[in-house]
Length: 515
Image (cartoon, rainbow, N blue to C red; front, side, top):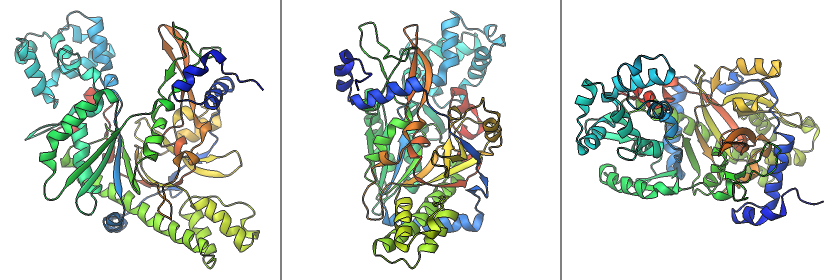
């Protein structure tokens, strides 16, 4: 059967690092459409989500402190995202008005209200001192601009190249918080946090950031400037970087589901979303990996509770991992004396569904099934009470084979036209703040091939545009939902204080981000 990939595009696709088989799979997906998940019910406390008391928290922290010394622990921070979305309303104001004055900000348009807050509290931002300096270098005084109601330079010099250039920087290089000894970028805040739970025996702290390659020099320079501050008392920062692979980009399609071509007749490729970072995670040389988004970080004054729960999910992972490994080693040694115990553990603690025929199988048959189900990557995910913030939620999902598994599901994966599915979504009590810890090596100490455990059917299609033309964009299975669909999942409740994302620049004005 002939390929649906046009022959004249094959060389472009191969040069981009994408196989023709993968290109064909993507085009077929555009044509048939992605399938929504089949929600069985929302995961809740006692039904998929663990709630732990203080004694259990203390116990899990001790397990982590002990077990982390015997494991290679790393902190993984997706940090390639641009900060441009943080400044969308401010950019709109610059494009809309030549002059921005107090009268301008009296309008009730959302971007005007947003900008009024930005101006009224501009001195509360951690980058205020830097902004004063760049304005002064061009002969302007920040205080006079505010007093005279001349606001455009304050916004322009925050966003554009003639000033701080924040609209064109990644979030990691934006100054988030004020301290007595100066302001810190979110990059620095993650370094400081990593000292607490990603420190190896001997003092080495392992942290990995995914970044855009054009900012590598800025990250390198900032890291070198920070070494003297943090490399004390035997601590060494072992910080590594990687970029999203071009081969994880996806083909764009036109509205007829054919490859979208640019004005030169070449296929257009788009980044595959955060699910593309599965390859970056797969290459890390670590046993346990903590994952947290670059914009979800609070000042040190609020971090004690964050550390308590961070270590708790790490301790839970070590507790679960050790039990899983113990059962797998017994199965390998043909010691079937604890098969029933392993089955109960899989069902009751790991949320794993056994086959209907499990109880009637021979010991060898039970051992083979349990080994297949237990020999997988493991993750423990923090879940916080849903107070209206966006994010993937925990649900029990019915798979094609009829089994029901515990998953993180994004709203885009749910068929909201189906009243039953919509009702289940509305019954959800928690969501995932992208705060998780993963075990990515097996019981023999060998790394898993993480791509073996993703669900390719959980991609989704979004409508975008380029050069004034509509296109369809395909996003790969999300890193913490579809890309980890066939992992062992344990969900544990954490307090809302552990989730303080910065989606807009004014989010930094929240009490949690102020000094």
